[in-house]
Image (cartoon, rainbow, N blue to C red; front, side):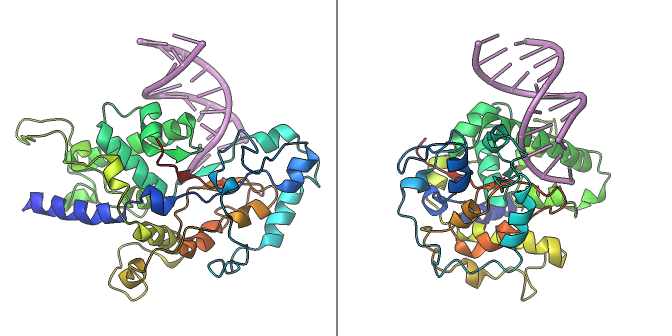
Length: 317
DNA sequence: GACAGAATAT
DNA sequence: GATATTCTGT
């Protein structure tokens, strides 16, 4: 029956949820040492180098950059990043420090989005407001603005989904959530939308007994394994190149064998980003080194100075 | 003044 | 298109 299905997907989805421990921090400072020096920004070994992020990793025994888990990103050409950022980097000088201090663009990875959805689910769509969501997510460096922005988009997505399932129009026929091939859908599809989100409220006839699914507290979820999430992220990016999402059957699709591998020690990664001056991209990346390589892929080389920031759940909320 | 949500900009 | 920033209402 339907319920069983939901229970099933939920159970599976849950497995993919990142746990704070797995996700643990690894991030990078957004300000490279060079920049820090250039702009006289203090970088305490055990403190906050910048107001941008709270670098747990900073006082964390950072694994050597030569970590076996950190193979040189094939697609990621440091030189490109460097040169690209050179204009805005310390060398470019053209950019003001203010720019450097500017909060970098956050990339909502599937993992991060999962946390987001999870939080929203727990709060209930009605109580899900940026601040609360942010707190529930417990992601270091994540701001209310980040969440608000994402929430805005998420709502639009939900609305769209509702429209599809409600008006029965769109190819949604099969289920409530028929992932389209839009990038957005891929991301959002990576974290199932609780069905009750899609149902426009207890409509007569639907008779949803509970507006809520039995979501377990985030804290509980956090204890789950999540290596899979890392994989999904990787796949997410692969998909962008290879084509589509739902091809678990194909050898290259879902390789659960890989997913089920013992969690890679989160101990080290992301330092590399720090090595890319001018790169302010921030990504919440789970500890799996396996995924970070792909993560680094410059989502958009066009703009030249896109920045990514790596965030991570702190779990200390 | 803080926050949420929407609109607009990058 | 994704995310940030700004604007407006509460």
